[in-house]
Image 1: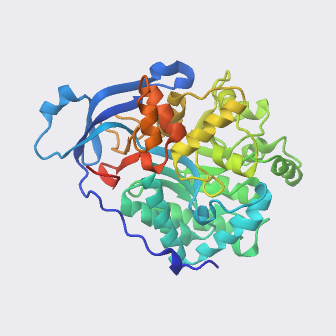
Image 2 (image 1 turned 120 degrees about the vertical axis):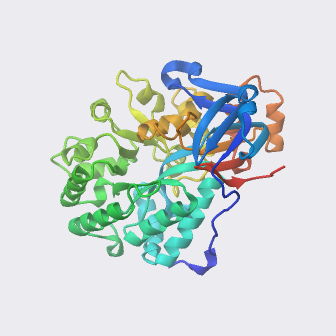
Length: 453
């Protein structure tokens, strides 16, 4: 077991305790999907004002028109030359793998055995889970991520620790305990019945409490028996408002193995389909090796694929055909995820940069508008949360990231030659990292600020 004490407890960031205020900066948001509508989907206000009260946006528009309406009780934060946009949304990450980021490993199945399963056994210790959950949430916030869909360990206490940390920070998290009743170390195995019972208890304890949302989480088909997948389906039928979160077709060896484990199924997607695990609010990470028939079925059921380019590159898994999936006759719902810890950075900017590189290798050019759409409104839509996050409009939750396109000497050098806001955004996604996150707001509270002036 890794040394728990060495991590050190992390206190909740209390940069700003209030949930009302106003932000003056360049404003960027999306009115539509740029994969379909082009750059006109991006809305840019060069000198904008964003007003929020009690954690919800009340006004958004030109500063000249809105400044006169500000009341004395609202603190105005001005971010000169910065860009304010909706907070980033990470649709697939593992907090229990935060300590194995940048740990060398082989391909997927070897990585699971040598790195992942070893690290996850530490989360049987509630103190370890609490410490890592706090550090994980703070790292997301420091990188401008305000909502995340997270896989925990098989242990219920690992789920409690994450939801407690998220609640303390007023951060929106979708999470659940992983279900595994075969093909893993005995210390990580549950059963079909215990996974059902423990998940139901956690749903009742956490789903819809504050900003917390639950996800029934069979790790992947290879780690669950048909009986456990059926139990997950029954549970989802009883609690249809929660999410389903798993993995799909990440690695060629994995795909071949799934055929052996489920010989009666037509393909990998059919495994989940036969067990009733496809549909709206179902999230499947990766989906690299899918047939057209499988893609059609995912589209028909409104099932979401989560593109995790950094992890796919790190493990050598393959290249996700983003543009083919988004621009086919029946487009797929696609979200974006860091996939910590095979993913190598908590930064959605770095994740976008890797998505651009993967697209280039497949003969496409991912635009800045497309990339930032995926990190904000696009993923909010895929998660069916676009009525509350992912954009700026009255009534939306005030989850906001402030980006500084001149945060580093290299960014500043590039910014001097940027022709427009899309050029600035592209520079940020290629060269940016946590240093470009000037501030993060969670539900209207400034939870992180860098280089305050």
